[in-house]
Length: 247
Image (cartoon, rainbow, N blue to C red; front, side):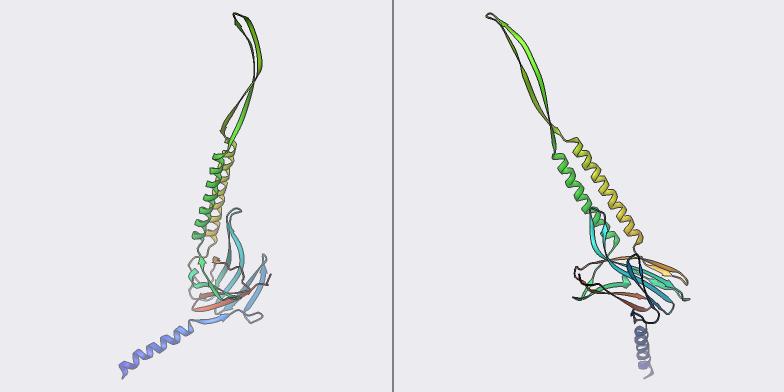
């Protein structure tokens, strides 16, 4: 009997610990240990709980370059460890769900994947520009005046007149502009890629008194009035609702 009770007791204890490690803490306006501020035009919501300070914002942004960009949901997260334990922060522990008007989980996209898409589209635009420039030509017309005399048995004949010829050649200026544009597109894509990957949230371990944060990218749905951002950290799930006014 004792041998049967021991595994059962362990299973019960494991279930209790699992339940405790998945406590849901939801941000509510005016609730204790919560805050909301506006920073750089974005709403930042904060929850303070059991030695963890978690601040998040969620907005709709265009990521990329002036010529090549994608409309995405961008979540910014900062976690501060005020406890005496280690806290793990991981991108995979952050999820986003559209709530209204239609419930739908939104896929997270890595900065590397988005950067590759920006590079590919920039390369296609540059290639089309180069092809178009190579097809362009310029024409130049040369006009000349000719005169002279022809002598023969019957006497001499004097002639004079204007002659012209047209020459078609590649438009070198169009090619130069296309090459400059291709270089500019490549440089802009490189800068956008570096910026996205530099600010992306990466897995990290927070020691006591440390703070860490970064950005995460999610697919955007056009009609979204309410979304729910969930962050699993330190054995708890922090929920942050965000709403937008209907336009």
